[in-house]
Image (cartoon, rainbow, N blue to C red):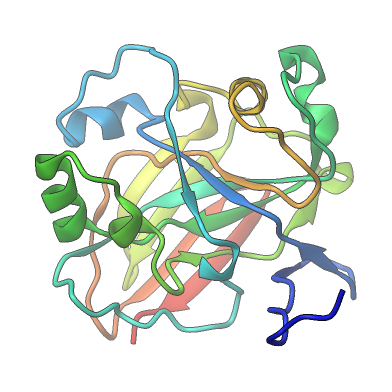
Length: 228
């Protein structure tokens, strides 16, 4: 069928060591998945069913691009996260089969308009304006799982202008990657091209124009972004 306007091009993420790209279908995010971060945000860290929100595929910012400080906000925070890219999916995926659906991993940043998020929380409104804005999710190259396996532990960190701001370990995730995939697939039917941002450790904080933000998950990937 022809279209009345040109269709949007697919969002493609680079793959380490490859000339082909990873096409993104959806972007899911896990909220408060590290106990220390839940505490710093004023919430109970006890294990409870995870909750999810979404960003848009075209919110992803490929490596090498700058992060434009967004309008209508004066308090934008960094949140470093392990990213999971799916090669297949389904509904009600069993935990023991979950990682078989993973194509690879990356590191990314969930930039958040914290002031807009606080206003939305107070009013009981959605977080879309705080989370799903343009360029809000810088992401590294995707590293195939066949090259690195499925990391269950490892240092996750973020620095601003060389100063360490966030540091944790993947094993500190309240809900591990297989559990996230299984739980998410009970609410949504997952599919090839889905990307999952798995939560952030403690230490989130503001960025300013001119800041250089570097982050990584040891053994997976690293990323550098300049705030403009």
